[in-house]
Image (cartoon, rainbow, N blue to C red):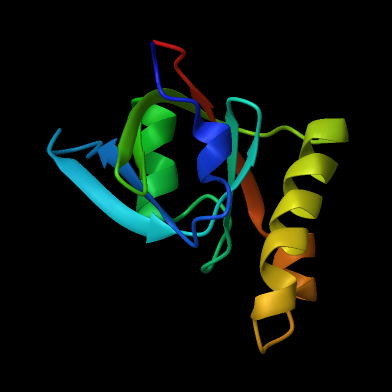
Length: 122
């Protein structure tokens, strides 16, 4: 039986591995995340919204892996295109990190690019 990511939602970070859009080599980043079922949400907030290397990598090759704690999941990454899912991603991330972060996350939560990774079931 495949591991259920929901039990890992309290972990502080996940590790997202994308394939380099030029080299094809794996690139891993540590990043904040929130879970909603098998959907993992992350926000790209460093500089122009779609300029982060990891965002550009998963846009070209959406197949990614995600490690949460000691579990690894395959997934398909995609940019969240507004609407209810956009609101959900922002709300989940702010609810998770605002209580433990000493700075102001309001602008990040409002302007960062939401990205979803649909985690594979098996």
